[in-house]
Length: 81
Image 1 (cartoon, rainbow, N blue to C red):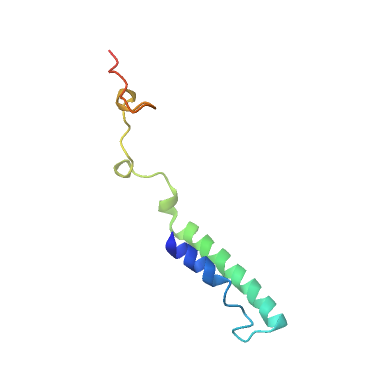
Image 2 (cartoon, rainbow, N blue to C red):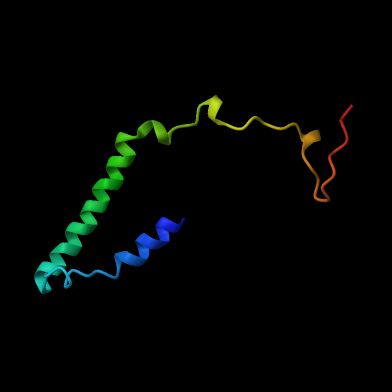
């Protein structure tokens, strides 16, 4: 979470003007920047397809029977006969 906050804060602090781009060049850089992020996102989705499918059984948390779930007051449900 901290890295996300830091990256978002620094992203807007350095502008294309600081890097020497002016007017039309800065506008072109905005387009290139947007296209680059779209390509990266599409690449992650397309190339890491296995991560977007259902998790294997070994990666999921086992289901807990209802009688073992705590109630809103913290006590457990009585065993169902």
